[in-house]
Length: 223
Image: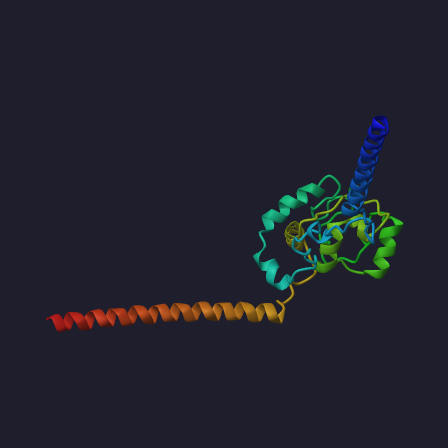
């Protein structure tokens, strides 16, 4: 009888332990049940990765009537040194790898005497008859881009100011194009600036005169 009671106690303890372990396992599953997300992955905000720098300014020809009279021609002559290995700048000088550039501003494209132009440049001349200020400005930035296949392998002048300077220098070498009048807006802005400066000077002079008059009156009163 005693052995039977001991067995029952042991069996009950084992059963209770098993039920406790099972209960704890189920409780853990309930507490830490995994719920997969409706959409896999996670969103990345790429807006912060996009450059917020200033937009690139369009490289358009300047107002030649405004910039040419102010350009330092000697600076353009220095830029032209990059071209001297292929071009001559002297009136009546020989052609070299490229044509003589004396008088190129205003010259009909592809017409330098004694020079053999390649086909891409000849085709370009049919659509653009004359070397204008604007055309030279665009062409000198990247000759191969404007005239694909031309034998002129010069990479170009990416700096707008360098192109303005060298065009101003070329204009002094027998150019047949006159300097155009400034654009009306630029001219009006310049006139307004001059008028404003004149007004400021007149106001300063008036103030100085008033101060002198006041000082004179004070001196008279003191006497």
